[in-house]
Image 1 (cartoon, protein in one colour):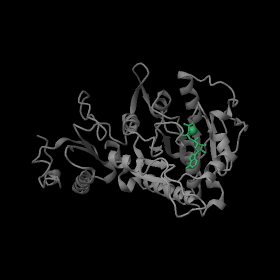
Image 2 (cartoon, helix red, strand yellow; image 1 turned 120 degrees about the vertical axis):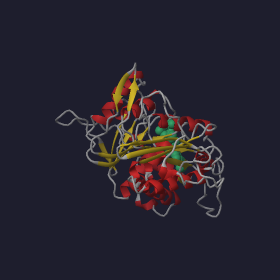
Image 3 (cartoon, helix red, strand yellow; image 1 turned 90 degrees about the horizontal axis):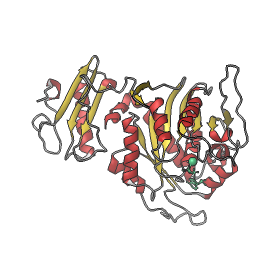
Image 4 (cartoon, helix red, strand yellow; image 1 turned 180 degrees about the vertical axis):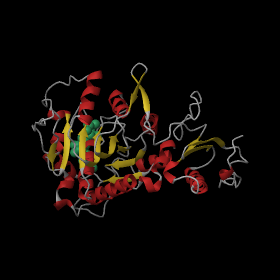
Length: 383
Ligand SMILES: Nc1ncnc2c1ncn2[C@@H]1O[C@H](COP(=O)(O)OP(=O)(O)OP(=O)(O)O)[C@@H](O)[C@H]1O
Ligand SMILES: [Mg+2]
């Protein structure tokens, strides 16, 4: 039986018994100044799971810094909340969250994840389905973060339908090379961006396939002179295919935001997406709902849930991830994207609900990511 003196009094609020009495500890591993604690969470709801985690943090706080305490819960009947420890590796086995993860790439070669130089946080914006407003959200989130005083870049990794040049009003712009042969990103509305769309003609057939993609994407990450950024947002193509995997496998991504509309959110797809990020140790920052409702301009007291009500909010709850906000369906938001003057770049929209909600979401996302040390954000990693 696993025994740790500091943890002997941790109580399961559901039963009132200690986790030791219930034989819930599956692993307690101490390595230098870090500690990993694992317990079985079967029958414990998310709110009570958090209470247990808080007790664990408190119990270990006198011996370990909060950032060095990693708590993981395991559930036999719910694969979305935990990944089993790989017992096949020699002990101490579990990669600690702050170690550089190494992954098997291709045929058994071990690749080291690389960080994008001078970029504080690399965030992947992901959706399980296409057409849910991911690119619109990425662009407007970037502008909202920029309004909060952050320096932001956008990497449009969508090779199939790169829409960032259009949304940001830079169709036809050609990125220049710097003296040391790096690519200069294009500046638009106070953010810098790079996109496949800047390198291929709009009507060119997409000829990037398989391995080429990884190469080009790598170039976008590491050969673009991003300068110093608070956030680099990556607009991923929809789904969980090779492109998404290759990016998160080779780059240190600090978090992923999943976006969906209320009706196209499917638990199974979202779980799959989360699993992909989980496997490559990218924490999920949370989920955003786009096109949540429609309020007609001439009937401001009416609210229509055109694509259903609270679909994403409920899914986030079910999957125990943060809900990061809801963006209404607004005609002017779409028009702004089509015209190349994105909604959040224009002060005249500031009295609109979409503007307000974008700022709220950006504030929440920034709070989570910049406050991650304080809040022990990395505990999410093993959730
Ligand atoms: N909240 C919104 N209100 C109104 N229109 C929106 C909203 N969000 C996105 N749109 C519009 O919906 C369409 C699809 O959005 P967008 O291109 O951002 O989706 P996407 O998920 O990136 O799509 P793809 O999978 O093709 O990359 C665009 O015309 C966009 O202007
Ligand atoms: Mg898109």
